[in-house]
Length: 319
Ligand code: BMX
Ligand code: ZN
Image (cartoon, rainbow, N blue to C red; front, side):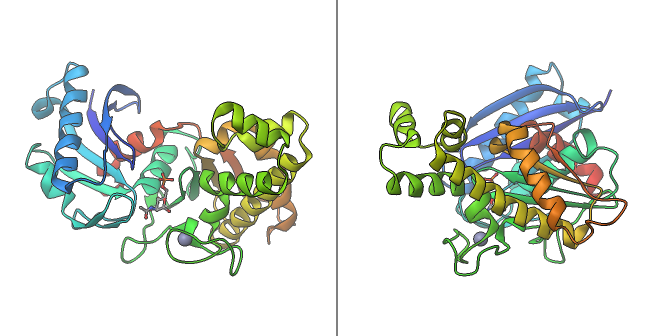
């Protein structure tokens, strides 16, 4: 049996996992990212988590592990091993591969987190068997990963596949990237929370307002849960969210026409109440609506593990 280590570096947590050749995670170790702090400290903790996960699996890093892969938000140059830019981690030209190799004497690969998650879904999840696939993650941001002919497509400068930063509303809501009206500003969990708060401000004492006060905060679930409890204003928020999401997805399909478009991230836990109306809207809008073959829209299968599994197989993606 061959073993690989995947590390998911997030704004909140560092998670390392040992994955076997059947794409199963056999052990995990995690710690808080605690950023901002010096990048070398973060790298040291990442290496520590990798070593701990290997130990937990009862394996030996030197003898049993083929390589280590890392998924990180921002621009990851997979050829130089440098994280060129990551605003939420505070990285600028961070030589991550070099740092990790100070502790671990193995080949180390890096990729953008959403690219790694897309690769995970492609090798072992909802996009398995596809030749061309696009995965988008609806989390803190909207991440994008593009697989063409079984390879990760990251553009000529490794900054490609930033699907979240395509505009779907000119002069719309401010995005953290500096543009206005990005897909991410509407379809991320953060965007949904913002739209929920806006609706609550307009309709004080609505079910959303009371539900979020009971819970202590507005979350990405507030609008969906309140809609189910009969709040017409919550239904408006959900409808608006679904309309924006369908618009963004239709744009992606019109460009790539992949076999599979998979959506992941926390918001997807809503399941069919999210997926079915999105599918119906996309079906009516997509350029190829009269064609025989159309992109299948599915919900990601691997959840938070997609990033770890994808990162663990980066040595293959890069071969
Ligand atoms: C942002 C961007 C992407 C990332 C996406 C998903 C940064 C730091 N991040 O659009 O690179 O893939 O968020 O990130 O520039 P998540 O935090 O939602 O997983
Ligand atoms: Zn943006």
